[in-house]
Length: 173
Length: 171
Image 1 (spheres, one colour):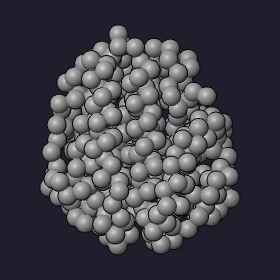
Image 2 (cartoon, helix red, strand yellow):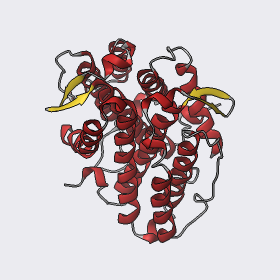
Image 3 (cartoon, one colour):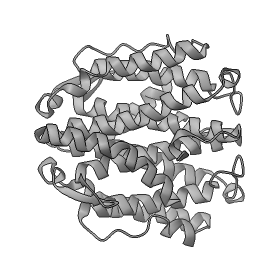
Image 4 (cartoon, chains in turn blue, yellow):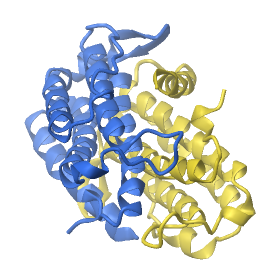
């Protein structure tokens, strides 16, 4: 049980260590980035690992398929990172509607690239307000939400994979 | 799809509004942790005890084991942020199996974590021992929230597979 937590920590900690050494003053953003990259990395690896024939799998009819989950993560990451740089809130389901494995893997890679600027800002900039669906938050909130949201859906993906006899990336040695 | 995100946000911003704006790192971490912890707490209350032993496939934790793992991990991560000696992460999971016991363990973990999420950003930049690695206290606090989120993602699927609507999708 403890091993799975150690694997998670080990995945995130080299990133946070590098970033904190480089930018001690920006521990807020560097920590948010490390945790988000851990979750994003697992989702991307899961997308690569799952055979395309299982992209349409859903354990029960009223939930997203695996492919839709990958697309939803990509769409949400784009939206949250854009919001975190003052670019407004632009929800989209463009990637969620895709079904091809290659397209969804690329969508996840593109989403990560689109987040670079958001996670390159200084802590001092992250107190700037963000109008988020009518709610007043700040950039730090949306940066952390991005990591939390990706990890929540990774939790869905873990169970889907286990149901199909696959070992999820976070449990692989 | 968009509605689910909005519900998550509405819950998180409600917690966010109660915290000082100056400490954006810790207040954001607290908002996200409170949101997902409350969903897990409500899931524990919603699930009938007859399904606490449910697992969708033999290789994964039962619903009860997930709750025990979450409570134990919260105690551990918050102890790291507070500078207390952490208990073993699997202490609750091994010792507590009943619905009443696990619902109470989650409440106890949340109460223990409150003071961890009350520190300032300046304090959270201080270092903590996280499994032998030097990390910031903020790292432990954010990690606690996303770790809860990952397992709430498991719980959602467990609930859906039993025909139940998870708390984050309820009106």
